[in-house]
Amino acid sequence: MIKRLPLGPLPKELHQTLLDLTANAQDAAKVEVIAPFTGETLGFVFDGDEQDVEHAFALSRAAQKKWVHTTAVERKKIFLKFHDLVLKNRELLMDIVQLETGKNRASAADEVLDVAITTRFYANNAGKFLNDKKRPGALPIITKNTQQYVPKGVVGQITPWNYPLTLGVSDAVPALLAGNAVVAKPDLATPFSCLIMVHLLIEAGLPRDLMQVVTGPGDIVGGAIAAQCDFLMFTGSTATGRILGRTMGERLVGFSAELGGKNPLIVAKDADLDKVEAELPQACFSNSGQLCVSTERIYVEEDVYEEVIARFSKAAKAMSIGAGFEWKYEMGSLINQAQLDRVSTFVDQAKAAGATVLCGGKSRPDIGPFFYEPTVLADVPEGTPLLTEEVFGPVVFIEKVATLEEAVDKANGTPYGLNASVFGSSETGNLVAGQLEAGGIGINDGYAATWASVSTPLGGMKQSGLGHRHGAEGITKYAEIRNIAEQRWMSMRGPAKMPRKVYSDTVATALKLGKIFKVLP
Ligand code: ADP
Image 1 (cartoon, protein in one colour):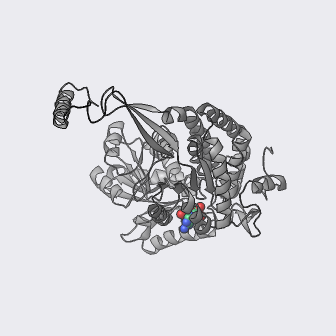
Image 2 (image 1 turned 60 degrees about the horizontal axis):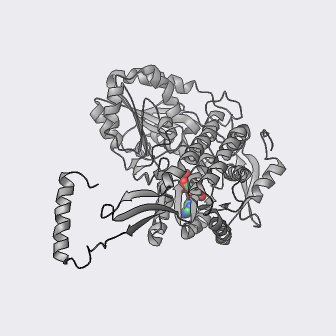
Image 3 (image 1 turned 90 degrees about the vertical axis):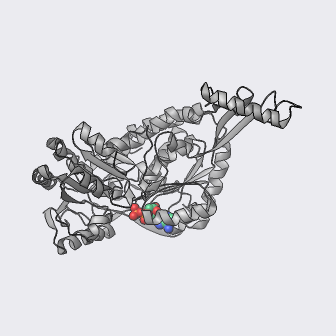
């Protein structure tokens, strides 16, 4: 395979290879994919519809019927090879991600490494999570009880444009390892990252038809996937999550969703301010803030407020922004004009309401069409949309608080509950973390440590999501549970001919004794 890409349209051969992997490669209508660094055309994909989704489900269902008979060992081998291929091809993968998202190299590297980490974790542990489990039966010794995991069938996966490589495959990996097929719909802005992942999966030995990708509009293709899948994994906005939730609720089919956030970060007065200065730009501006878990609100205890705003503004101002594959750029572009307009509107509203711009606050057309500076605002007046709504851009506001209690109240005063962070001594950090209403909490870290701790489930509280990715739950959610109870030697109704009352009294006595001697689960 090609090792590196030019900063320009996708090379013809690679483009064709990726197009051939879509289930709707025969469609007539095309949609252009734009490279945000320059606004130029990167390539195109086909504009799919309901029939294409139907076709994808037919192919993947047939493939799943065979896949279900493969052993855990066979599956593990394929995914460990995929892990190696991802790392081997990482420069190419970073190039593709950067070309279609406009993000900086380090953020693209995060995506590649995340795929490897998640894949290794599930390849090594899927067998353990999904093995048949012997459980204590209803009647000790007499009832033999087993819990079995059964694949759901075909899992639907709908993903956004912000982390197209990670989200394009990392949730599919456990679904496939659990014996399912996957029909995926990447965002139309970023289809190639997901497709190159499928290419590598096939190279690693995954049956060709098991993971299908359909490109097309969210409501049409995504809606058709939701209407047919046996489980839906969705990452995107809370608004779309609600629409999909209605479909899944009506169908009574399982649904896991990671949705929006308005993530708070608290700086306590006993925080190490060098750490704060080093970490805050990462927490707020990674991937230009287009990250569900990135920090959009900062609450600082008053003793250290002035120093924190001085240090943080200086660090944000010093960030290098640029278009290109070079590692030196600390921040890249926004994804498109709509996102630039969205970010500008939030900031302009806040400025008009009287907010102080500590740094940034403007677009950078001199670098590329959709660039926006890292922006830190203070004194944002009550009622300004920026205070409560998710911006999904490189914009954060900072506020002074008198006490940590006030900080916690403000942090929790939102319908969202995705990620939160606290900077302080270990004692303060853990004390505050235990009071925050968020699915992921970083102590002296923004979001990276919780995200990369893949052994523990991660998801949103409140309106930030349903279910979790990562950990045991990140794979068992893709399976049905079969509870098999084999009754041996004696009926559940007691020995033959024993009067029911006598049996009932005997069981009651056994339950009492079982509790006293702690022999029952
Ligand atoms: P974002 O604001 O991050 O783009 P969206 O929720 O709009 O979040 O999009 C996330 C994913 O959901 C994308 O792949 C998009 O195409 C898809 N999508 C958007 N609207 C719908 C819908 N009505 N039904 C199903 N999928 C949708």
